[in-house]
Image (tube, rainbow over all chains, first blue to last red; front, side, top):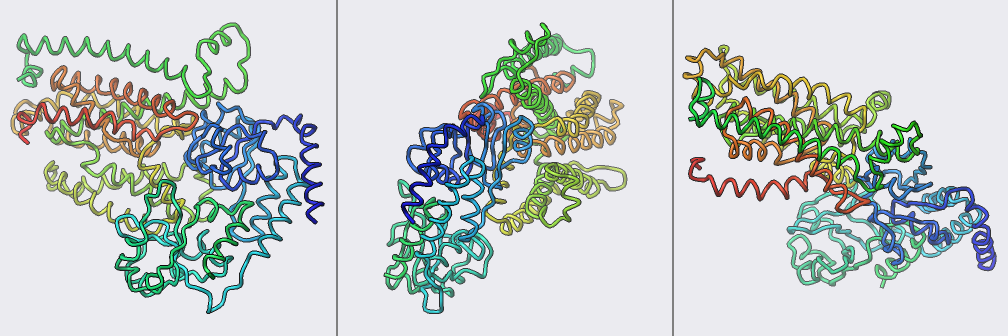
Length: 277
Length: 358
């Protein structure tokens, strides 16, 4: 299997120069997961710019940054003279997208669906846009297989997890049902304790205490502005929980954990290991 | 006092001031032209206007990219910047004249708050509209909602403040503060309901931007703002009279009630349209009239046109900064106007705290 994938991606790389004459050598990606897929397909040489959320692998930081995905400037994007823009389907504003399409740039929207099928679909769309259908199929198969192997079942014995996206000002904003955090927690065999809210919402101290998480999950911010463990477990909302008693907190890179790109299996593996240790 | 001078034949000092203000009008108009041309010829793509003009003059075709950048991106953006900047500054000058309060701006009568609520409603609840309706308005739903939000809040306030055919400016001011608080609370509820992406939209909308400028938006907001700006100078004499107090103004033969009503309607239309297309852009409305009053005095006959010119120039300049400082990305323009405007405003306050009676 691995040999097949290797040969498929090799042949894709070798085929690339022939396809490159399709005048789609200037590719802009909007969305860190999409950028990672382009790298995983070995097509990074065609990238000429990226958005703010694209920060992996580190090489990509050398490319010009066209800004935050939902506040793009039409002239800023056009100044890169892209032939092809592959963008998360919530990129905007709509006026900018309209102008870009009128300017004759191929614009490929990619839906965000936080399931194994959603990730495979994402890889397929990016692959098709780049003319790398076969390599993308191989990558999608590989990622799906890795993910299936990494995923753990969820039952009532699974650890209860509270994902905190922000604890600024002592007020907790948690990941509820339907959030990207909810999806990755479930894949790693954890039980999200905050499914009473939808998406990312601020929750009351009482609700957190009542949910009684076994583990706190947070993003590991660069140059950590985040809380120290002591400060976290001293928060009134958290002090009474099982997580505080066992001092269980997991911090992970935000893009790795919530990006749902080709590294999703890595994220699930390390989160699963952390939750079940 | 020079306001009195502008109503009668005038003292030598007031004539000097009027003369100085007229000279300033010419200087500001020239400055606006220069800044507009520089704005049109600068940007992330580096397309300059001169080669483009030469191409047009010699009958050559512009490249597709140059045509889109100049005609579909920079030109509507310039016109929208002109209209919004002028509209904010003139609205500020009208409000300050109407309330005889140097701290008034359209925010204080709840126009901006109402417009903001409209926009927030559209962002958070727009997804609930039937698909057919959403398709009809498309990406202009937020702008439309902001415009109607501004209008409805102004009409409400006007009704509350008008009793027996008299509009009490003090009641309107207080009602405006109450409405702003209510709108703030409702916005808070909607912000709580919003999801992560909607929250980011709300944040960006609140910071203001001209990045969404299209010919459709120019066509929608432009005529409203143009009519409002053309009508504004007709109120100059009435506002000058009001500065002396309502009773004095009435003795001077000024229709106080009509002046107030017209000023409120013009501000509602101009601010509503401006907020609708550009989001929240702060400090232009409050700083520009102050600068001009410091330079050439409070006579509305010159203050209003000068405010339009300086407001437009400042906003276009701020827009140029916002789209070049982090190119190819861009900063929300509200950040630029606040960073430039707040220190100027503080300086004015410090310099004039004795005369402002604060």
